[in-house]
View 1 (cartoon, rainbow, N blue to C red):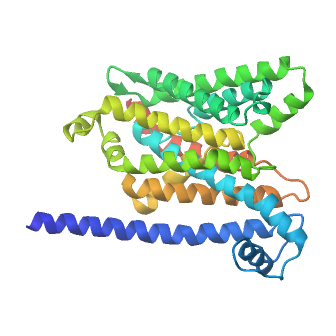
View 2: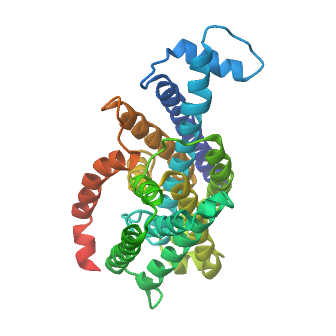
View 3: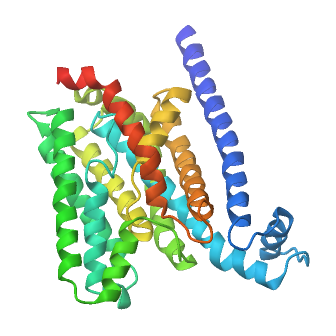
Length: 355
């Protein structure tokens, strides 16, 4: 009886913490979206932004101008929605990989998964496959991300154990390998328009994103994130060791590859519509662990919202810091993420030496 009461109390506490976290992050994300829509080369007041958003629905308002409506609905809002999807995909992929690889420094960008996705997308751009089928770029990015995930996991997994140093070194090697292939393509490509598109895309950004990009990547990213949320309890056990996971009835040989595929899908879809944006999946889970703890039943959904908030905030900063020009989002996240990664290396130095 006492055990049942304790279990009920834990579930109630878990739900309360999750609800509180979702509520706070939803308010912050909504505020960040409104600010992002309102700022830019053509500033729009928050009142006019709300007027445009209300006009999308059944409520007709005349506070805004036709130009403001065009800027909000066709330029800034699609960009923000794509940024939200990218943030969700990269952050959920990051927290999943950290659990699967038992590596606090695992991130789609650091262990080469984003580089594999970038290579796949560059191949599609070079061959101009997107002119025949728009989904070809996301599809090639997914294949590249999945291939990189398999290679890194194979080299980091030995005799039933995952080695952090081996995983990091494999990630560096895979990332360098795909980066060299991309460089070779850029050097050999004779079409200057394709080269310009590849270089601009590799920097990672959300400029010129449209509703078509949101519709292409959004559903798959949301579906993948939801599926991973259903495996949150399994991630808690896989983060400890395989023996505990097997004792609790988890088929490790099926669950881990399935979650790796989902992580590759999220990374591939994000890379396909935004280019290479790294460190999102590294920063957000670590910040949240300090606040809400390591339970993935809370960590995964809150990472999704925090990742979206981080990308939107970084994009707003990139668009406004040197107006009228703008930075790429990937530059901002790298500027913030590189020192954070070095901090994690120092923090885990003793653990690295022991492995």
